[in-house]
Image (cartoon, rainbow, N blue to C red):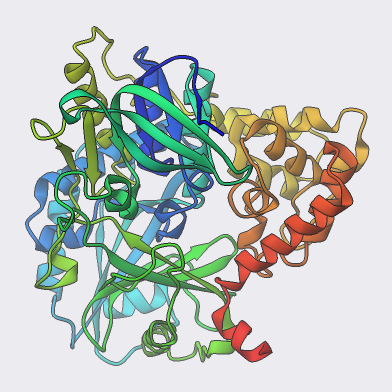
Length: 541
């Protein structure tokens, strides 16, 4: 059967719907370009969902003299606090300094002063230096021996970066973009003189093939950039030399900090975080070169042991063991090729690579961080407009809130929502921090269906309307999309296993799913969760 072609060509085809690709699609759509946004999986399901979930300036980048990156990151942190107040919020940090650390209190003080200077337009408080006693008063669980002092400062947290990517994609679609998850690029289409003219696609959910034509293809596939290129310039040439970062999630534990802690590992001196997150604690990350299968990347036993051991050294009363690990996850940073040297020294700055003059009509993105995705998108769309020789407006993504952040001030909307929603406060707060102002739209799905106001997951408090809302309005295609990247139930203590059957039943009752599809989707979700719980899988074997 011949491939089906889209009826019209696009100005820009964006490959990869992680945070960078979704941000590019939104910016381009806001400037009046016609956009096709594609991903071989779900929106934000790759590296975006495998981060430490922080929006930060990158204190350690100062050590590598990447001052422009730190300044850019701190500026973008403020932008995200403004345009996505429901998804990005201030988070207090403590950076303890011990005798064995490579960086003493004087160096940390200098770094914090530079951090404050580079964030001169911030809305958060400046840092404070604490002595050892003050640090212990603030966080009594810290190891006392050798504690010289600490720095207290603020950065920000994106609890659910998956939803940050989603809202960019939803806004792009509102503006006319075509957004297609589970649409894999089989190959880049070439025209006269080797110019890239579009993409050949395969719909992996429905086993169909398509062709899309476009004036410009933007390869924003993250660590999969080289796979999309397929050796288009030189078969053996690589652009990405990613490093793997693994995280583990545990419940509250003895001595657990009340704020995020950023410290040096005793074993090798590399920095890592212990972050309160989603009612649990997120511990990570590692940083090792990776050249394995990008689609099956997972935390190793050695990485899990390393993070547990370092946490117990920092917080002696924690007593964590592998049995305390609720689940783990790992991702690959799309960093430039750097075969030698310290992984932490590989630049985190992004590069917009124009393949011309060798190959026209193609841009590839190397690097990028959640914090700076909006600035990266602006640079890409600026380059696209220039290459297309089009008149287009200036970037406005720093001014226009994302769909869930449209009320200003957000706190006023929060109180009005609680007063009118007829939900208990805990349920209302949960909806607000996931959906923002769109929580009111979500509740419309409960009209005439009181059962959709009831929780389908007792652990997180997620209500039935969220399942219907995800599948009808948020581009979710599978039950895994619903649980892991829409309702966020899949990141609860039981990783959604306790709620999957109830969610599937809602899809049967309210969305017309057959019993066979519901069972198939539930089994598919359980298979996905296996990757998050390697130790549990071994114990059950």
